[in-house]
Image (cartoon, rainbow, N blue to C red; front, side, top):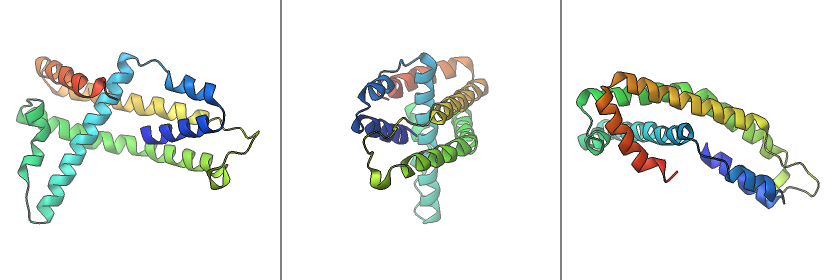
Length: 172
């Protein structure tokens, strides 16, 4: 998703619409936005480690440490680690239609510009639907953050949240 939005920003800046591109890149990062970015990254990493571990098991070269990378990094109990994995899987299912629609919107947008060239006088403004899709993506991510929070003891979640913010919050 970020790659798609970044591509649009490159298109905007290349088209001479630099004021609009600057406005898009200078948007204010709210605490919820930072949380959405951080938890989106956490859920994706949890799924990536699970996928790698599952693939290793199928190849008869098990790598059990892959199932505990995040649990070790964030000092999660077995129950909290299982909750994270369940939330990451459910998050992926919930977010897929939004991502699929985003890809469709971007594909349609790019189709307007043959060979990726924006001719003089062409409107290169990104579709407003992308901003709405980003809001939906953020809302789903924050929902699954809250579900994860509800599945953990408050103290454990606060520790996890602090570590996630330190790891992902400032670098995204």
